[in-house]
Amino acid sequence: MLRRRPTAAAATALRLFASALLVGGLLGVPSAVGAADPISVTTPFPSVAVAPGAGLTFPLTVTSTERRTVDLALTGVPTGWSAQLRGGGFSVESVIADPKTPASVSLEITPGQDATSGVFHMSVEATSGSLSASLPLSVRIAEAAGGNMTMTSDNTTLKGTPDQTFTFNMTINNNTPQDQTFTLAAQGPDGWTVTAQPASAQATSLKVTAGSTGTFTVTANAPSDVTADTYPILVGADPGNGQPLQAQLGIQITGTYKLTLSTPSQVLNANAQAGSPTNLTLTVANTGSGTLTNIKLTATPPTNWNVSFGPSNVVQNATIASLDPNKTQDITATITPASDAITGDYVLTITATASESAATASTDFRITVVTSLIWGLVAVVIIVLVLAGLFLVFRRYGRR
Image 1 (tube, rainbow, N blue to C red):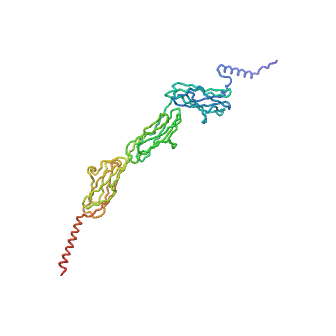
Image 2: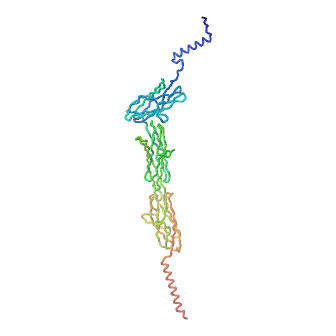
Image 3: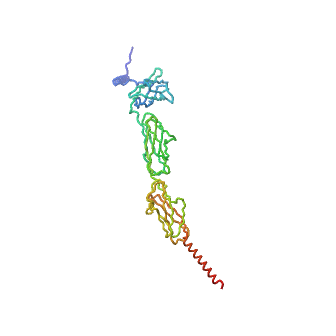
């Protein structure tokens, strides 16, 4: 049989192919690309550590080179542990996977209550006809592996007046492998209105997923009669696992300064006689939340009138030393109209001013001046004498 000799181009191609096989063999590179496994089960975290009694979840992905049903099973689960494959809210035994849409499943594991420290191994087995794949998993039980939960506030102490609304922004950091639902609570002193709720819902609980943070707010309103002081606010968040979180906050009430001036009966008028002293009882009241000091009393009387304040054990140099919040102090204003004051109504202005510049009160009093009874008697006597004189004159000269 006649054999044809290869052409030069064909000989060159054969030499290149042989060289490629030789180099590939020396370097350990396969001469053809290997095909992907028909089915596989994977997880990004095949080995984890948890605290005793803590549950955990493995996210699983089932892939297949073609559309097929893949059965799933667990092997090696320690005695006393619970393990379940879940997907779409159901307990899962098989999934459908194809090249474009891998199946996602969660493996939820809860170690037994008596699980001791150590490493435990198990696996997820996937089968489809004659095809199979296995995913080994390991769980290490360790006291320090459970992570922690913390609660912080943007401010530990707020400062303001009693009429303000105080707001604390709280943050819970759930650095554990489990989702946590916290029951929120907040408490202040008697009479305070304190609430704790999530920022995005009208609720008293907050769900924080594993490894993330959640926020809520605490608002506090003081009672109207609160005095200047620092008040504690206690905030709690209970996840229900015996590890409640607490935070001690504070609100500093700076106080409001308000002052009123009146009389015990609220009557703002009095009678007086020209040249004679008359006592008028006044009531000075601190209606704010802060203590008032050095309350100075001044009067703006009519010309030549005199006004003084007492008693001396309360008022010295027309000054009240101090007055606590929601307290009153009765004092006496001694009013002496001018001796030549004529009968009529006069306006007397009395002002009380504390060292705290915001606290001042001024009240006008109507003082009615009446003529002295002595001068009235003198007038009557004069009238009587005049009438008696006229009577005598008419009697002596009336017959002529």
